[in-house]
Image 1 (tube, helix red, strand yellow):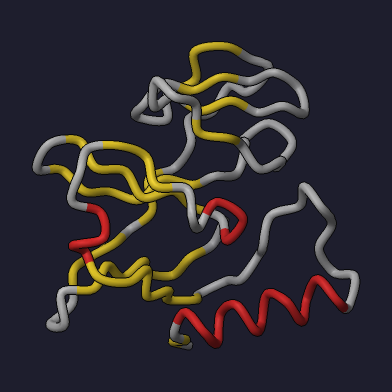
Image 2 (spheres, rainbow, N blue to C red; image 1 turned 120 degrees about the vertical axis):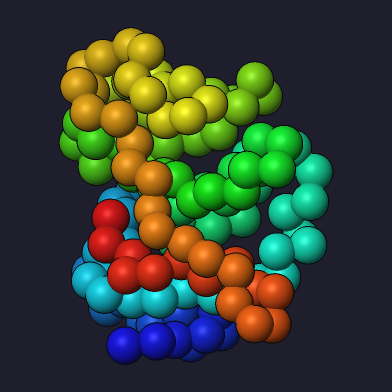
Length: 131
């Protein structure tokens, strides 16, 4: 199944309206491919959080562009990006470094890096989103 960003937002909104997703609950869509927009939107180093509630962050570290889950591995709350590019879960206090590695529990598993690529239109595509 492949959906564009607009379809993904409409689907997500429908789930929220239907009561399937709570305030801090992640979206759980197995096998979805998401177009995160032009790769040029992520040109500067940093953590881009516009897709945080969709289940992922886009991270630029030098020439490395990657996608990391925004879902805490402890109890599946949505984590926040911190100014130092680390991640924090407000639900139970787990912390992760800029690469998504656990630095403070209760989480014991790192944030997963999600498969992604740049397509022929120079868009960042996240493959088989399953968070």
